[in-house]
Amino acid sequence: MHNDPSLTRHEARAHALRREAMVDFWRGADAVWARLQLDAAARLARSTLRLQARLRHRAGASAAQAAPGAAEGMGARR
Image 1 (cartoon, one colour):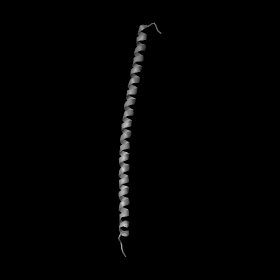
Image 2 (spheres, helix red, strand yellow):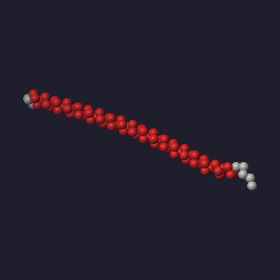
Image 3 (cartoon, one colour):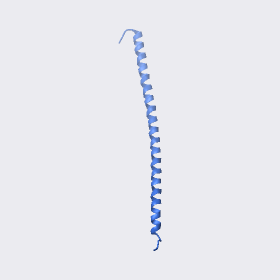
């Protein structure tokens, strides 16, 4: 390469700094990915709970609507 030892030393330092920057970048990217995964899992859990509540509500509403009609048909004499 170069004959100047100070230039070689600076190049080595620049290489080490670039390597450290890449390690920091990937560490940050991994942290963001992990946070996204947790957020996605939490959203999925909330969505599941909302769906279950909606289905329970519909089932209750259907049963309430069916009950009066069924009661009139059962045992009603004229």
